[in-house]
Length: 427
Image 1 (cartoon, one colour):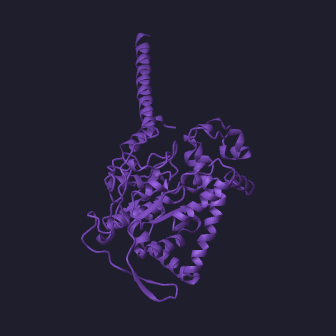
Image 2 (cartoon, helix red, strand yellow):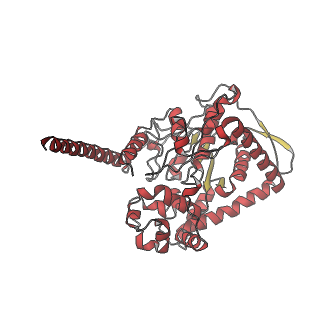
Image 3 (cartoon, rainbow, N blue to C red):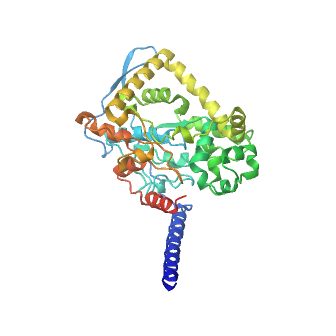
């Protein structure tokens, strides 16, 4: 009897200690995520171009051959100063991999966050969030998650930098965001039933709290990412003003639904080679976890995310204008070539030729970051016996974002600590 009581006491003691430790870790993470203090930074202009930054390799960038709108051959130099606005749930991890590879290839200097994989999102971006930042420092690429702040970003990058971003159909984005971030949004915890998404869409106002913790993930997330108020009425003049401001800042706005065409436009705008935009789809969910929206649910989703829908329609129109200028036949030819090259690389690099579920990923370094409480994100196994010519490229193309950031020298101790806490909590 006494022995049993001692075991129960020990068990309770271990549980209490674990609870205190977890609570302390969560509080620490919360404090680290708190709004950063505003501090004065000296205004020092960055150079017009970072082309000759010391971090660059001694080799000069080679001019690439391209064609102008008349189909005549011309030459240009690859663009290396780039701001990529990484929006949420928009295939942006795949684009990040492309940028990481290009930056490594040309030894460019990235503006990285400090100790985590985002710039203290959802707080508006400040230069002080950049690791080891000093006024006047020159960076080539900034591409991690942030809440866009044009004034602060412009003081980091050269004046001739290319600004690019990507959007996604708001209905699909909302479904993905609800699935991925749902456990992090307390307002979803009170939604009854197994199908929380369907229940929420029946009457969003019943559950939504505009000031609720992390509630921005579930309403007009794109508009919020760009730094604007996601709770505005869609007819508010500030919405149109915001869309026009985005249009003035970004030379290219890509679309997830036309990802390959987007990459061809990116290649053309930056004067890159086809090899620079080769890709494997990263951070993709297994199909069994994707909710298929009915026409009625889609309509309700678009109505709930009316600002994002307005934003998307605007840039869908400008996207196809760019395709027309580029040339439909030329675009089709380039997309076909991109697909051929991607299939070629998949045959060289990927064991089994396709993505697999998390439990079937053999190498820890290839495990993607998973949403709270489940393993729904697919990953890859690297093929064995890859020809030495492709070994490094294959590994880089398949490396998940967190591991790639670590390889590039970013200390992600906050992100990794949060990952350990998530595993312990076992949601």
